[in-house]
Every structure is written in structure tokens, then in C-alpha cells.
Image (cartoon, rainbow, N blue to C red):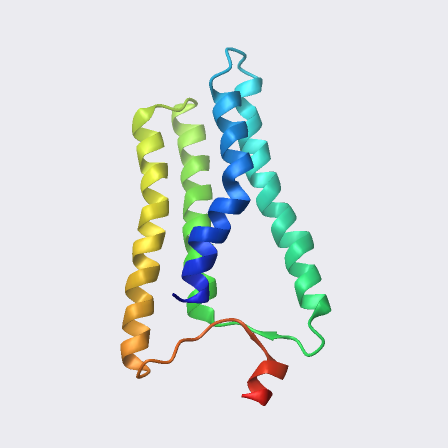
Length: 142
């Protein structure tokens, strides 16, 4: 299993479980303002991860990180698409319904399937080698 696939499946599920529970509880509330909590929670968690956690990882890496652009751009592209879709739906319909939820639910399996396909394809092209995010120190020692 590639590092990217592990990141978008197991790590994402473990990290997102509290957000899912919060979203379900807030979404079933009768209060209109309480139903907005999941939006702030989900985007706040993503911004926190990007701003603080990613910057701390980069700062603590003594020799910098080299990004595998394929594994970086794929989840980022899906995230941006989901964000843009949410903006368009919010302004166009000003309400959420089952059809909109189904599109959102299809984003995640779509990401996993595209990651599996691209990992398999790149593995074939490179003769079995996988890429990933590596530090310069680990590349020198190998």
C-alpha cells in the first residue's frame, strides 16, 4: 500500500471520525445555526492541518522535504473540487439536499479509486518502484 493511499484511507478516517460525529449530531439538530457547525468544523480542521501541522513538519525536517507532485496534487485537487462545489451549491441553491449529499459522498470513493489507479499505473511505469514524500536524509542513506 502506498503512503498516499494510507493517508487518504486509514489516517483520514482516524482523523475525521470526531468531525463525522460532530457533523451528524449538528446536522440532526432542529436549529438552523447548529446545522452550520459542520462547515466551520471541517474547514477549520483542514486549515489547521495545513497551517500548523504541515508547517511544523516542514520546519522540523532538518533538510527539507521533497514532494512527489502526483501524490500531492491528487488529494489537493479533490479537496479544491469539493470546496468549489460547496461554494457553487451554496450560492446557487442556498440549501442542501440528498442529491448534493450523494455528490459529496462520491468524492471520497472517487479519490480512493483514482489513487489506486494512478498508483498501479505509476508502479507499472517505474518497474515496481513507488514514490512518496521523503526527506533528503532518507534518500541519501538509501
